[in-house]
Picture (cartoon, rainbow, N blue to C red):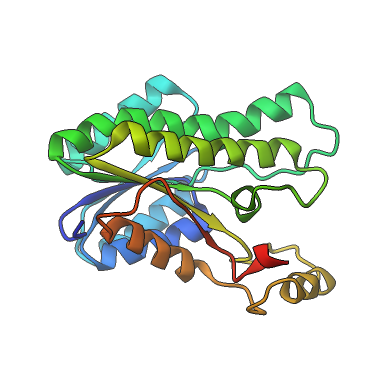
Length: 243
């Protein structure tokens, strides 16, 4: 799929999402960004993307609200004329040593259900256009098929569900729509990461560095431009899964 003149909808992803958005805009792709509470960040991102001469909009949504998700998809098509690409980046990452039912439900709703809702609402518009791309953002742990850290039960399970959803959607929506996932590893260090923690991450990553948001953007471009990859989950983790 060529990016020039297409329309991409990106959900969430304040930090990495900004790089993905501007990378797509630089290739002539019009953009719709959703946010739940981070309105200023979303508006700053689309303002930066608009400098490339593409059309942009920012829309507020609770990604677990089915009615609002449907409205947002309609607004994107109505404002930008079409919808070709969906990038599900909305996510919650939280340590829950003693997970409650609420912790479990929140992780599943945000990390898996939201992607399901956006996909099934966006698919008809993509099929009408004859082609589409859906990219879900997972996690290198879930893509590796085994948990490694205690305290992340709900998070790990929800990302595993997202990977299963990716495969199922790829089968259900073929041949017009290709559905894949990206599983980031050490991409951007958290602001509160200590020097000691940072050193441990670097030591456990064969490429011995943080990847940077640009590496996720490169993977997104590949999965949009390819015409023969679907149902895959690509780890972008500097080899972190090998340890």
